[in-house]
Image 1 (tube, rainbow, N blue to C red):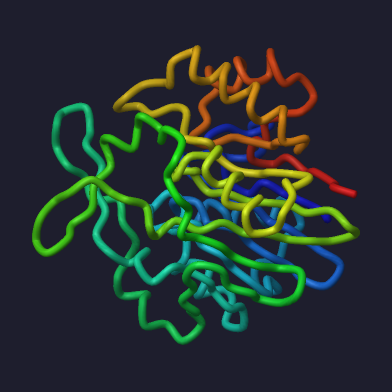
Image 2 (cartoon, rainbow, N blue to C red; image 1 turned 90 degrees about the vertical axis):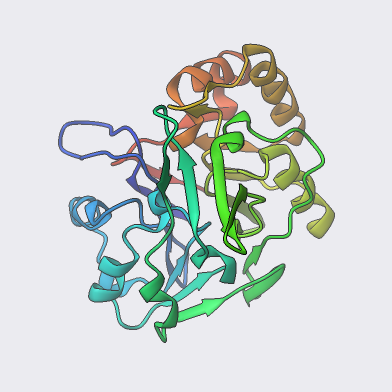
Length: 274
């Protein structure tokens, strides 16, 4: 598999622009896959620089209903009329974030896209083919990211805390290896990995995505909780590639403990997984 990071909060050089968002391109032996589109059309610009033709993408998976992961959907659909777009039906509900001025800001997706005929709604465990699956419905047993406390949804005309039922994860299998992609891990990366293990009976070989250990509003997770997370992640045997909402500060703590078992994937980075 070849992995190219189209969008992240940081970039490998000035040649690639960055934004608060995530978009990852995955090329398997038979398919070209896009996981999230970032917050804007930026993914398209960086894709061209990385030699990725968005018109040739076969599958788009949107991890959850926040703009920083699905803000580029409309741009994608304008460039690609063949790909199937897999998204949880709850991803088009209304979502908000509490900002530092105590105002709620809408962070959801464009609702007008919900009826597009390329969109396929997925729930629980959804098989795209024998090697590619999506799962949601993650049980929240271990503590969730503290930044979840500033994220809300509208339900029956009331603003309540988001339960993140709209978040889904992508599983890709190739050459006896398994890759797990998470968007922000709002359901908790420990819970997601535990749910993966309950579904498949083993842990993934590779994990790519954000762990939501950092937020402009709520700050970073405590050093103790990040250190405990690092120790847990090491027990899985997986190699982790993270970025976006993990935050550079928390990442440095993870890196100190996990060493070569965790790496940062900035926009413009290219990764080959055997």
